[in-house]
Image (cartoon, rainbow, N blue to C red):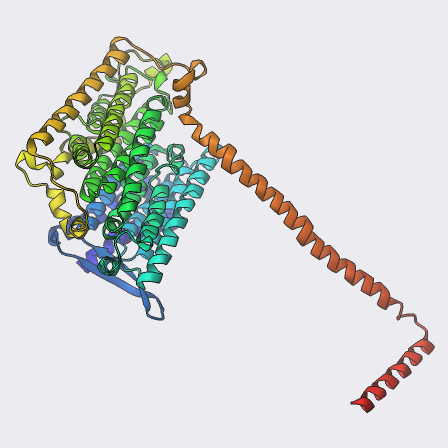
Length: 632
C-alpha cells in the first residue's frame, strides 16, 4: 500500500516531466493522452488503496526526514485516511475527466503540450496538498496550486487582460497565504510540531476558545478565505475565467478552491475548540453565499454566472463548517465537484459550438442543435438548484437542516441563497438553450455537437450529478449516511467538543426537505415563464439603473478595491520610492562622490612635481616620526 500511496502523486508528476521535457519530440496530440493516462493511472491507484483501506485505518508514508533543528523534526511525509481518500477520488477522478475533455477542447491550440504539462503539475500539487502529513506539506501543495492557477489563468499570455487576471489571482492568494503561514508559525511555536495528527492529540490540552486557539484558527481561515474565494478576497475567482474552460472546471470543481474547505476539516479539532472562529466562519460563509448569488442574477457571460455560483456554493460549504457540520461540508464539496465540473465543461461545449461566444444574450435555440450538451447541462442545473432526489438536493438539504437546528436566521438566509441559485441557473439554461437562436446565420450553420472526448466526460459527470446523493442519504430514508459514517474517524474527535443540541425530528426534516424541493420547483417554473413563455431578455448594460445596475456591476467591489486600496498603495509606493531613491540612495551616493572629489582635489595639490618640495616633505615626515618614537 505504501508503493501505491507514493504512486498517486508521482504519476501526474511523471506526466508533467515527460510532457515538459520531451513533449516537443513526441507526435502531435500524444501529450494530451500522456497527461490524461497519467491521471487515470493515479485514479486507479486511489481505487486500489480505497479497496484495501478500512474507514478507520490510516497509512503514514515518511519519504525522508526533511527539516531537523533542536527538538523539531519535519518529515516529507504523506498521510492517507478516510478524508484523504474522499479528496483523492475527487481530484483524480474528476481531474481525469477534465483532462480527457481537454483533448477535444484544446485540439489545434498552439500551446496544446504546454497546457497538459501545466494540468498534470496542477494535479500533482493538489494531491500533495491533500496527502500532506504536516502543515508544511500542505503549504507546499497550497503554493503549488496557486502557481499553476497563475500559469493556467494566463495561459493565453498574449492577451494583456488574461495576464492581469492571472496576476490578480496570484496576488490575492498571497494575501490569504500570509495568514496560513503565520498560523503555521504559531502552531510550530506552541505545539513544537507541524505534524497534523500530533497537533490533533495535543490540542485538547489547551483551554477551549483561548486567545491562542482563536488566533491560530483565524489565521488558518484567512488562508482559506483567499484560496476558496470568500468575502472579501473573492474577486479573483470570477476573473479566473480568462483561462481555457477546462481550467475553470479544474479550479472550481476538483482542485484549488476546495483546498480551503479541506484544510479546515483536516484541522477540525482546532476549530471545534475555537467556537468564536466557527461563528466567524459561519457568517463569512453565509454572507458570501447570498452576496455572490445576488450578483449571479445579472451576469450575462455564461462562465461568469457559473463563477459566481461557485463562490456562492463555497460560502454554503463554509457555513456548514461554521455550524460544526464538517462531514456535511465535505458531502456538498463532493456533489458540487460533480455538477460544477459538468456545468463548466458543458459551458465549454457551448462556447466550442459557437466558436468562442460567451454572451448568453447571443445564444438561444441550442437545445436541438447540441442535444447531449443540453441534456447534461440541464440535469446539472437541476442538481445545483436542489431539485428533489438529485445530488445537490441531499447535500444542500443536509446543510439547511443543520442551520434550521442551530440558527433560524442562518437557515432563512441560506434558503434564500438556494432559491436565488435555482433562478439564475435556469435563467442561464433557458436563455442558452430555449426559444430561437439569437446569433448570426453563419454561426448557426456551423453549430455542431462536441467530439466524443468532450461528450463522454459530460455523460459520466451527469450520472454522478444525478446519483451522487446516494453517498449521504438522510436517516429519514431508513438508510445509512455512508459518507458521514466513512468520515467518522476524522470528525468524531471534534464532534465530542461541539454541542448541537437535540437533532431534528424526522417529521420536521421531511417537512423541510419537501418545502425546499417544492420551492426550487416553483422558482424553476417562474424562470421558465419569464424567459421561455414571455421570452424576456436581459436588459442592455447601458439602460440599467438603480439596484439592477448595482448588481450588474457586481456592487462595484473591484472598483472600490481599485480606488481605495490599489491606487493609494501605488501612490504611496511611488512616493516612498521616489523619496528613498532621491533623498536617501541618490543623496548617499552623491555625498560620497562629492567627498571623494573634494578630498582628491585637496590631495592633488601635494603632487606639485617640485623635487625640493618632496625632499622637504620627506624631512618633515622623518622629524615627526622621530618625535613620536621618542615620546612612545
